[in-house]
Length: 250
Image (cartoon, helix red, strand yellow):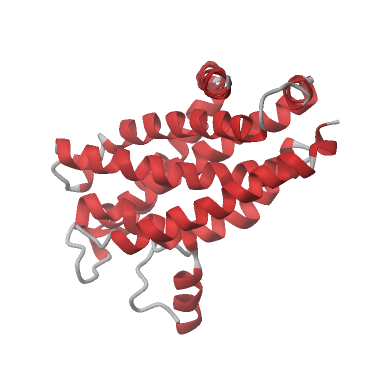
């Protein structure tokens, strides 16, 4: 029952998302446009130890992280829409457990995010990388871990959001600064001391290190531990919201 409900909700999320072309284009093309303008704008003027491809190469893993972030944001908008349409109310009073509802939404988001990440990853040769099967495999694995983390965080925030506009504002205030301070746009080396402290405290920094691993063979064990640990926290938070915040759906 739980597994069937989870799969049904996930399938609904995937079908619904890809039917809305504007969201697909927004989640997919916005990071690519960022990469084209910033990557080729800075070009070879950007050099740092350990990154030999210029700014296009350095910024590319950060763009993949941005793809996952945008996919998670756009996917969780459906949670707010479901509340307005009455679908969430019917699910909330059904025998389906809170964990199955969270799991279905998150699973759908992970599938959507991973598909989009793989599509953008095929631009890697333009950044100076030789794309391999092993590289794609690593990206898929890390994508599942990171998108699960972001989807759970997005779910917890979307559950409390009364409107799509409010959710967008919240995401821009929280996630965009986290992405900018993750090492996606500039390395930790050479940054101001207080910026370095913020970057080390930022969970998304470790997600970015995972995205860099297939391209630059960066450390992955500790970053993976941090991302998984925060995912557990976000999962508990999301289920708590479902169990004790059901009045929100009314």
